[in-house]
Length: 630
Image 1 (cartoon, helix red, strand yellow):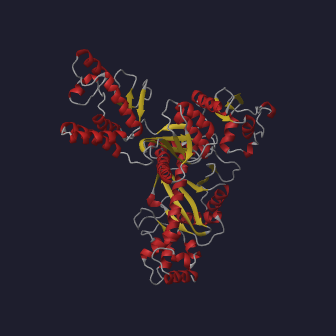
Image 2 (cartoon, rainbow, N blue to C red):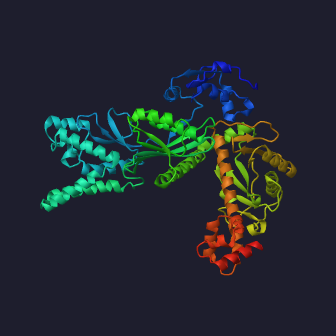
Image 3 (cartoon, rainbow, N blue to C red):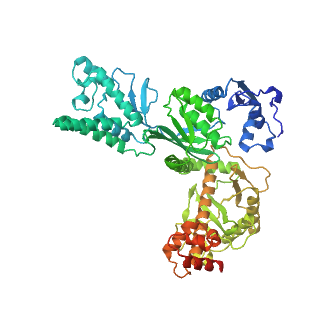
């Protein structure tokens, strides 16, 4: 592969102005669209020596056959043009979005003569005002039922409205008290429009002036002994309080904001978009993003905001993000043009905003896990993954049994390893194993030791009754105590690591005389697949079912190794501390929670130990002395 791309333009030909660039393939298809404040500086990054580029960036520039650019007057113009071209060309190397689902919205059809409130998934009703999205359809209906008690606006269909206005007879929902439009023959069009305005004002911000006003009217009617009117105001007040009670006050009562929580790995990201109006979460939207090129979190936030507000979207006064994008100032100008007023993009750093950001991020992390496991839970996807893996690794048969190994340690101490087993693309937790490694020089030596111990079981007959884990130093997750050990040989061994770990695994297979078993490794930074004896890795497409399966195996092995290591550390230090006179289980638990690790507790001075609740100066000195002598 040539180190210089044939279509690379001369440096002097590229302007230093802001603009938008497009990479095209030989057929003219747009592969990637990007923007830059300085086109020459940005494009020079793509034309650096190929060996220095990120693997996925290298794949994009070598797939392309040409690059072109368009100069624009300002950075804001480049942002707008980039968004327009991404929408037009849908480039395969730009981030790709997948809505987790089609969310229901509450919509008020302001374009109608007598606006009505409806539940819809259609975001393109002319003149409609939308609220939400809501997680469930029943949640929208429940909110509408409560709201029309306080603001009785039209809920009937257009045909019912027209028939009622022509005949002078109330529509059927109006007859049973479910519609408060002019078709119910109780209000005029003008009075109904005023109620619609109040409905929207309340839903847009949860304006508490309605609560205060209804309370004042109820008390005044009660004082005037107009108890029927007071009862009506009481019922409306109860409906409003019920709506407010369904969404907790998470920010200040006058706060209107959108908050974006993001969780990501090398190939995908999950976004949780919290819509906050009047300090309350009024809607939640989830997005899944597939990344082809390696982009930073700041660039990802940039793309997410462009997508979120590129259409006719309600833009709030404040937008809270985990990381500020590099062009935050230009984005604020772009959003101000859409809102008509100032918009602030900020990082949620402390207080209620930071708490809410942690909640959104936690939801995003869980959504990312669901996204990655969804494919492996589907039979067709699992079959495709195994077939793709067979083709990519050049195996003679699909690897129906895969064993993945991971090494975990804490600063070179408490070295453990894990083995997880997937059969037919699904985990077999009854066959998971964990290994304790007494002495080792590095991770490759640890990997070699563990694989030799595992492979040794292939050459010995299985006992009728398995020895306990206490005898072998190996543990089983979710299995009966007596179980045939290592019952079947795997078709594929997967190790967590790159070329060094793979070579150590291949050496273990040769020394054990089991070269019929295939081996590969997955390197976390670039998600590359390494094979023994190869100078270059195998790069699986980001949408590959095989890659998702290998990632799931690697992540599960890492989880299992960390779990075992933490259990060992906890047991070790608990056993040692239990020998200290006067130190019971409750105080040991508090100590471990306070210091977090064995190393930190051993290094602590008596004065620092004494700061822990329930630990006096004499007991702190005893703990310090006991740990120092062990």
